[in-house]
Image 1 (spheres, rainbow, N blue to C red):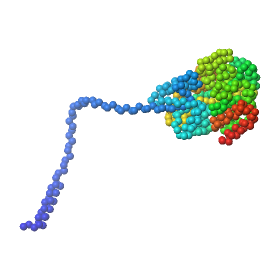
Image 2 (cartoon, rainbow, N blue to C red; image 1 turned 60 degrees about the horizontal axis):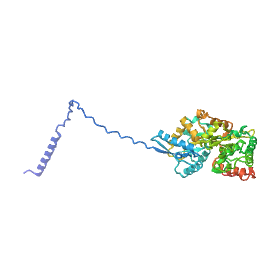
Image 3 (cartoon, rainbow, N blue to C red; image 1 turned 45 degrees about the horizontal axis):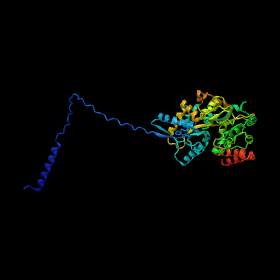
Image 4 (cartoon, rainbow, N blue to C red; image 1 turned 60 degrees about the vertical axis):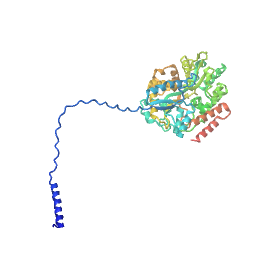
Length: 479
């Protein structure tokens, strides 16, 4: 009988032998790739491609403006019908040109409330429009309150920049030398005159005016009418008052941001004006407000009216001294009266040695701080300024002045009696914005209008220099 050790040894040897057999098996050969057999191509049925997904059309974005005009107001008797008609015509044209991109939506704003409303909205962080129409006298108020974007770099990069009238651009420039709006039209001030009432020509000196005024009074006619009310936030300060004081060599500021009222020149101008009021050379409506003073020129019971060039849009219908009527009830009436020679345009008179003064205002476009669609505002400005025909249409419509582009001033539309008469008056004047360097023009206008009204109408016994000094000191104390 075999032992257990013998049996265990035998089993182990069998296992080792088995593993050896496994290790001696030949390695598996790699399969040899066969050459493919060429086959006849089989015509495949064309596979219909899935149509490419279209990009979703971009949605039009509302481009919101504040103009003082109402495109939905079709009343032919509206004071702002010229601007209303302009918007009614041009909003659809703009939207067609920018179809799929911008949709122009205008929100009408009263001209005498827009500034305060926009400044309040910017300060409160509220909704503001993408673009506003503005006047030059409002620019400083906007800038001082941070309500307008600095658009200097963009303006200077535009093709029309070099063509801008320097004085117009200055009215859009802030105290820091940066540009905050684009001037579209210049609105200088001058005097509309019924030629028949002044057969020897409109006076060129205060002395001549007094002589002619006495003659006209005997004939039952006022020598002039003007806006002398304290209404509309002291609007009178920039109208006839400034032209008169400036013609006497005076003004409202020292060029350094301070009010300067108490000067011999200003005192002399106000003494002169006070005397004309005392002698009854103007209708009482000059102090009534609501532009009632214009009625006396409309019916030719007043022989002249100093106002802005844009006054032609509002002073109608007209009846000339000889009874000729211009009665369309539109801006065409003044244009026709000038073409007929019944109305002429003249500068303010001035003392010997002085040059007639003239308030220079502008109409312009600005972009409020916080505007949502700045690119839309840029497109709109270029739409008005980059096309000469469209620019002239704007100037003849809501611009109501001279084109701010020098090349446009040479176009045939400007070579008509109205603009030729206006150019003759302006070229004899030195025009500048009444606010000068004053940084709070709204406050200044109200204070100036109030004190001049008090001195010539409320209490003509007051000492002029004392009252002017008081207003000057009060304003400058807040500088």
